[in-house]
Length: 598
Image 1: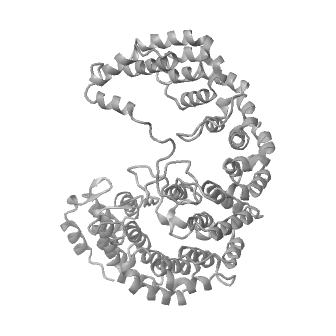
Image 2: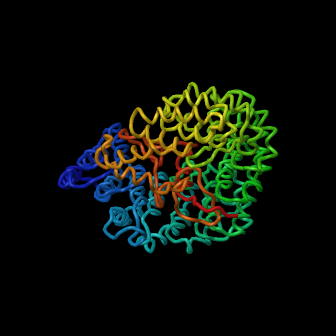
Image 3: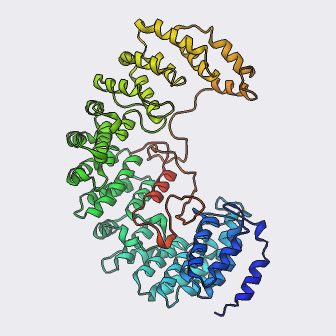
């Protein structure tokens, strides 16, 4: 179409962009980016595109300015100016939006963005038949992000185009868009594309479409996945970032169905994939199996033999990542203990990972190996001391390890991760760690808020007088919070509250220099402690607790290129990194729950 550049600029400048907002506040910079995107300077246009991904589509989030920018983006794309890239940006804004009533208020930015993209449906549908393959693929993906309101007019056009399209990637993108907008109507087409006569890119898209549409898992799906492994290369040039690791996505989706049949299906699939002859296929399978072991109680026992076999075959390089996966097996990984112990005696990160896994599957055996040099085994030492916040140490008392811990106490700086790990481990060991009292007393001045609690836990009767005097001295000097910790420990150790009560009174009244809010701080101390571990979130009965706190429910993240702030990964959907794990991990943590099941 003819592009009146002067009119475009005039209408662009007529918008009150400074009154709109994006990820960084005022959107006054957006017209400059759009002007550059529509210009002749390729370098400036590329930079503008990056800035737009960082501001109006920041890691998948959309804003008021995002909706306002869509009509101008559509005019640029319709003029044939960087059309594939611009269509992807339009589709990303639609994907970040929401249909009215789908958890988003009618007047929200998300609804406005989805509506703005849906209004460009004539352009998008016309572009699915464009002579340029890249335009057709981008347009097909963008149509899939237009939402429920566009499903009626869009679905027939997509079906008609799919019947004549010859390019495998475009066919895959069309099928995926059809499945989003019309899952029930797309089921026959998806099922029909499962067979070996379909191009691999279309075949895996068909498997994903069937599963996402809720169709029962069948032998045809199982055989298609195994025949196509490894799967990641088949979607590397697709634009759907939430499914860019198909085996991992299938694992999550089938487990979330929470049926015995689907759990059996995914564990059978993963067991077979782990035994693949293809190294890349095993890498994908290990990643998916690791997630399955975190989400399903039955997965570790079922997948342990295959995971152990992969770890052994990998040798010292751990090319598949199986060592980390073995740490998710718990007692089911006991058969791997011998191999892990041998590997843990080596050097480097692989040895540390092997020892970390051994801590999980056989902590008694891991303790003396860890004692040799815990400072050079940070991952294993972290796992031994409890790993995630709220977890308890798992390694039982070991005299050799205690000697190593006492050495570390003498050199550990205050406030470091190591100091908290040492405190947790010694507290868990209790009086078995009594010989560490001299080192703890020496460390008391450097760790005034941490060491008092540990001293109470480990102090034997014969050291009680010495420890009490040290705590009494510490309670009389230094910042009030440090003194309170020492006084509280003294009370727990001896029952003497003579120093504690005046300090609490000072804190309560604020006369100890705490200023306003001191009474609230003391009330906070009197409240019951919150539950340990990650915060509560959505519950699926079959899922186990996550090892990291989840992203907020409903969160979506996209890879963006922006010079303003670091993102997990960089690159627009068209240039995303090949093997990055940030997106799926965000997806995993957003979907995990707090209740363990089968």
